[in-house]
Each structure stands twice: as structure tokens, then as C-alpha cells.
Length: 63
Image (tube, rainbow, N blue to C red):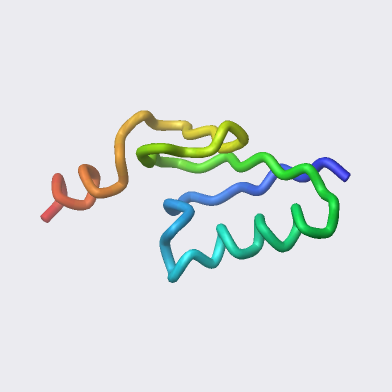
């Protein structure tokens, strides 16, 4: 099954919860693409970011 996982937070946020979910789905034979809000260095090919700004830069901007 093809799955599109949507998240507004970086994949490693909340202790890597999203990464763990993706790995679980892939281990069960699913094809998973991820649409996220922020860029992360060395993102996998199946991860698409809406903004090409790292989450860290956004947080620092508002502190």
C-alpha cells in the first residue's frame, strides 16, 4: 500500500516518533512518502519538505 505521512514537525521531533512509525510501516511492506514542513540535512529521498528552511532557524528567529 502507498502511504503519505503528513507532519508539521521535523521527523526527529518527539524522540523520533515519526521515524519509528515510518520504519514500522516500511517493515510491513508499505511504501511511505513523507510531507513535512521543514528541511533537515540529509533527508531521505521519500521525504518532501514544504519550506526549505530548517526547523532550528525558525525557532531561533522567534526567540
